[in-house]
Length: 154
Image (tube, rainbow, N blue to C red; front, side, top):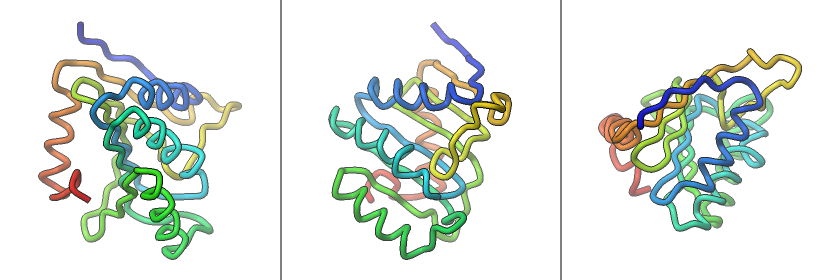
């Protein structure tokens, strides 16, 4: 059955862990920024999905904070060695923040999955919506592939 759930604060971390463990086909994270929390956050969850045989992608627009382009390139090499594609969007910016896994699950949120962590003292600081509905993940991915050609081939 179709469900829509509100995700608040630290629930984001739990959802990412559940998604990376449940993914059977793909695990795709979209984040406007790439920061120092990318490695323990989005990238490690992608690695967990890869161990299950999934394609794992972390898509971002620009490095944040002290992270520079050279650090992002090194992080991309490290992620690739572990099966995760860390892809900079290039000319087309991505402001949206999302997590797609398999065909039927999509989270859209305010949390920059690859550059921020939630603040336990401010649970309303990041809010998201998890939609579980037949085809929602594959429809979102098809739209992303139209915007970012070659997304799953990098």
